[in-house]
Length: 126
Image 1 (cartoon, rainbow, N blue to C red):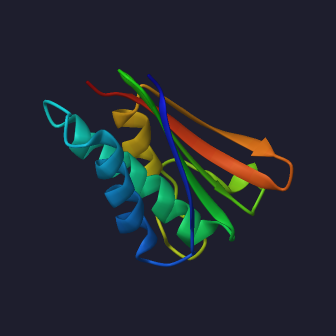
Image 2 (image 1 turned 90 degrees about the vertical axis):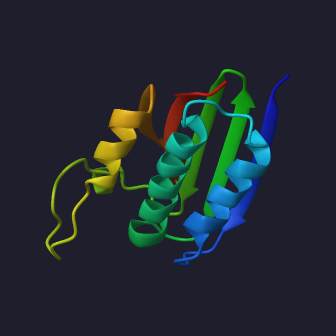
């Protein structure tokens, strides 16, 4: 049976922690072999990127259809060129968080949806 959770988040430094708490609630601590910790890293990175580099409104969606978990974070900035992996921007900030996402997720990507962009990742959880 598929479970879905969707919440709006503010462009606030506490939003990644809120998203991780929602993830734990959805998974109900039933993951094995550190899968919940891996999913928490991916969720935290995607939400942190939306907070730092995107625009409100930020929408956080989780879809659990065991063993697959899909994480989607959408924001109000449709510019796909702002999603970069392993580079440093002109302010000296790195984009290594997406390297973590790419390494930990079974798949990930970015899509434009009208005036919004969505960065997504898929993970396997038991």
